[in-house]
Image (cartoon, rainbow, N blue to C red):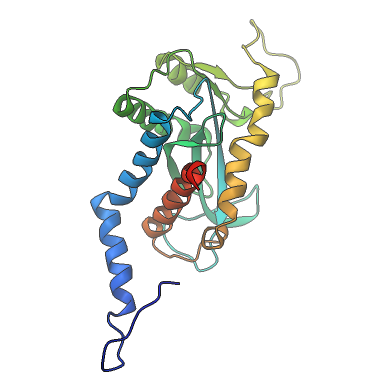
Length: 228
């Protein structure tokens, strides 16, 4: 989609592969991640973030041409990769997403996403103490709840029965159904906006770093929609 002009001899000014090599160089230098972090900083400076509640979830992208970091998801019956992202109540992606193969369980990925969330918060001087982290029942485990509590945040996760015949002994976990219902108009909406980018609806890049760089740019554009 990038137009390449022609010189006086009628030849293209640059070869199309130079654009690809430049994009790869930006990815390795951390420019794409810095652009994303800048969008979050801009939203924070303009007071457009609502971090009283953070919603998180994962999404899977099917890969048609193969590539690295792929796995077959028996739940969705497709081969691809998945990401776990975190957003605020205004559908702004606030933390770099965590990537994994499509056959990986999402629950352990949360423990990799939380340190990145803390890193963004420290860089922008954001206080997350008392923030509610709302997640699906698939993330219901002691390790995830402990990781959230250790960062002075409050988990809002429905208890996963895990095919139990009787109720689990002990006191019930704290859970607010009204906050949990917000995920359908927050994180699920973010993933729906991501699918509007046709290059990300299906993964055709065989190199995962290139695909994830495009995802990072898509989340950056979602964050900057307030200024369009």
